[in-house]
Picture 1 (tube, rainbow, N blue to C red):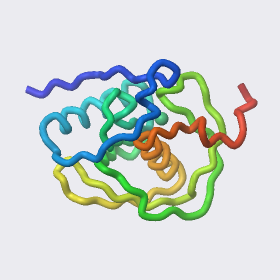
Picture 2 (cartoon, rainbow, N blue to C red; picture 1 turned 180 degrees about the vertical axis):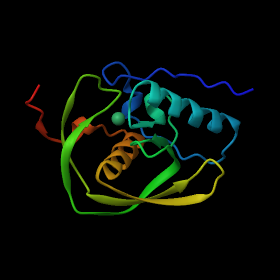
Picture 3 (cartoon, protein in one colour; picture 1 turned 135 degrees about the horizontal axis):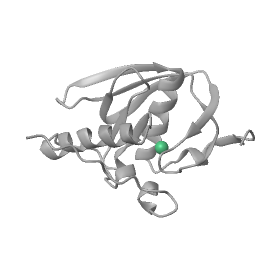
Picture 4 (cartoon, rainbow, N blue to C red; picture 1 turned 45 degrees about the horizontal axis):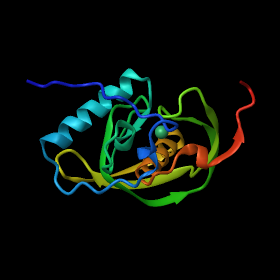
Length: 155
Ligand code: CO
């Protein structure tokens, strides 16, 4: 039986876990698989394009992303290189009701492990590059509000 649970998303004003650094995953066991499933479900239910484990209160280096092309799961993700620059509006499920412009690389290459423990590499441009950078920041206790270049004045 597979039970997928929606997890509570931590809000940054209420929970300083979002400011802590996450630890690398050393073994992909059933708990990690369940966490991956729950994170995806939680992200979809909240209409997000990405979620990092500390956002559900788990200080492990795990992210999930879906910008509309299917689920990407990365364990222990690392940015191998970044190129160029993009400005764009960003928000975060942990900071509801706020968005602002954030400068990110135009393109990034990221490596990490999939749920089978296989090393995978992803090259992302545009929104995918933005999401990868945003979610990996979460693993280091960094929030997009730390990187805002201008407020969104359109209200
Ligand atoms: Co976020």
